Image 1 (cartoon, rainbow, N blue to C red):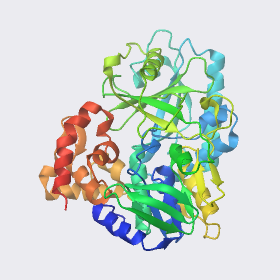
Image 2: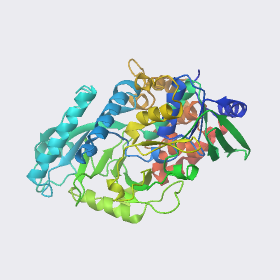
Image 3: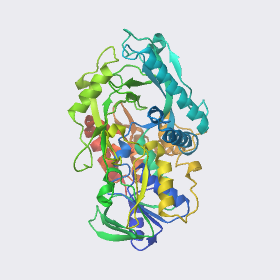
Length: 499
């Protein structure tokens, strides 16, 4: 079945969903919910998947973009979780999304704040992580092993480091996704290609084991979607639909720096956080030139907002930690943007949110609704598989460990590399749009790589319904508020041209 999502398909699927009884209703279209929809549809089940907002509206677009091998879990003794993370990283980088997921090098600077004994312990951890890589079957050519570098080598890779007192660095590699929101879009479209009805702007007003009361947020109409089973995959909002679930959300804040603020970066950074044994500040170069700096782990009390605010204290903390290893400090006015995501952590009643397990949980309520919470972006596929197993125990086994997502083939694709790493095989279709109308090759913003053609593609094939979808999720122009404001006119013009 055609994998394209657009307004016309939404209207058809919305009409049909009212008249059918689906095998499975999925509520929430972040990475986990879209993964559940794909897992179930690929097993041959009929699926309706809804979200009150858009694909990747919540936590899934606010991540560090890491697809990691579980190094932090090793440090805290969670061997099983580390093994699972390494295995799921292998699935993504080798089989399901090799166009979106690649290896990224990171340096851990050996400054006076990192004693020799600590450096040896950290290198042991990196080597254990490499053992997990090998156990998962990931070849070294995809995820190279760790090494200790001298000071000159470290400064060659990251010239912004303070040279005074630098003994060198530990270099490691881990996976990163070029764009977390694009991963979710690929999941949703692949699910649609297997027959799932993917419906954004449809809010679940209440859940039961046989369906949900739903409001179309575009028309205001309220109706019932019936299903044999229901999965609640709404992340930090899960407790609003399943009151028996108690979560302790934690806020992970990132800063966005423009290209050049840290000079040339040939590697990211792991910077030990003061007073912490297994937490690091991350400096994450992005393919569009931006650099992300994160992240915090702070408890959030009270109602869960749709879009979390970033407290100034988080910005100050991240800048202070970053500047501790730089030769020239980054100033507050050099921070172009910031964002925060909320982790849906299960409440265990004790400890800091930073110490709560990132292992996912699949819980079945008295009404029969299955709720899946916790976990990490890296392990979304395993979470989805477990949720479908619980909700539909008689379904055939999952096939998603070897199921390529839309665009996964990159071999022989003739298109600019920037398009290939975002669209995979569909990069040729974007290039064909530009060839058919040269005006679509224009940049949305001067100095920003996104083209008009990508906005057109997002409306026609990726389910974008308004300018927020285009700027905040199909592209990431919106990470910098100044750029977002400047791009609004183009986004609205593209939307006005579509049938």
